[in-house]
Length: 186
Image 1 (cartoon, rainbow, N blue to C red):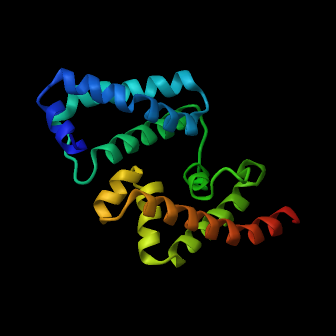
Image 2 (spheres, rainbow, N blue to C red):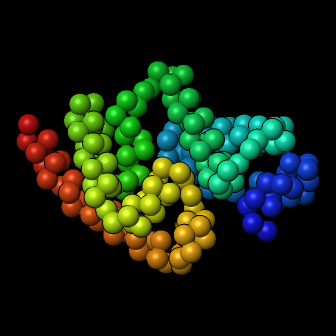
């Protein structure tokens, strides 16, 4: 069953489909939340709140693209709201930027000003990527699509999606090496 069919079933209050969907996606969403919060119990709470909200408000929710992307966006937004509530801000968008460049760089050693420079450089590199690669990167890291959803929407294989993302990360990392080296020598 595709994700929009699952969503329609949830809108119809199909408890069996909801329970199955919860079991299939819960861990992925918790891991995603934990990549922002680094505290498993709070990540679990946020994901559970998202599922409660989904069950209670499914009939009011309008989804234009992907149900899975919608859920990941809800989790991300709740994580960011939680961080704001405990007075942690992300003006330089480092939380989102970390996904672009992988975990090879520890960005928290840089000042907010330097993080903004790195962020802008990442955006410039992404804008210079070939259009299809750029679309894949944006779908994965901005719109939170899963590999299979990207492949389905663009009519390509999952392996092509993975290959394009890997190539994009290499290009971004190559461009950032110089910027990071300059910032480290300041």
